[in-house]
Length: 315
Image (cartoon, rainbow, N blue to C red; front, side):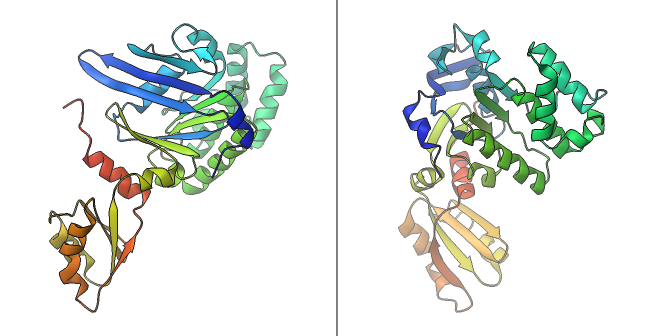
């Protein structure tokens, strides 16, 4: 997957270097550098408390970095934060709209806050785009998670931003609503909107043009999904057959085995040293009821591998 070719000739939407943010004695963001091209969907991955949300807030001017520099939408993140905010749509983790107002009333209120000209037309267009027209009079507090998500996205794009920041936008949303949400995100990116999204879902990460993995304030890897998997140094073997839970228990903690995970009727066994991995699996390979093959690690394998190698900065 690649971003629109026209993005390659444009200035980057985000270009920041050496970002640092401290809260008290804790370094929450530690020397993070990110470049996001215009029209790109860029995914943030990382465990809870890893600094993803803080980094997003640094990028859109809600927080000021203690160190580092750079631009967002061509504007200096330190000196021009107010101008950045006007051109950014920010969708937070928590639903933050008025539950005793209808969908249309919520959008009209947001349009008033931005002092948008021709706000009625913009509200109608946002309702139509997100499939909310038939529910325009429904109270926001009565909506399911998926419809609340649509309302939040409609509000984020109402003022026609150049950058969309999505902080775990599909948490608690059913698979159909998640897919429809991502279809809309790709349509927006196709129209030139840049999207930065944090997520815990591996299938969502795979829908991004590029991803970055942040663990406890440190940027550990970034690139396309294939680049991140290929650069992990991880080797994986697939074990198929009966008694996988028994095999998993026996392999756990053996030399060369970093991770063992059961996926239905298959077992993923991963480690950095391929020779050591094959050595510990050799006795099992002699059993006729088992089949052991070389396979590519999944993004989830790499995710867990990176988590195992990161240090919690609040411990």
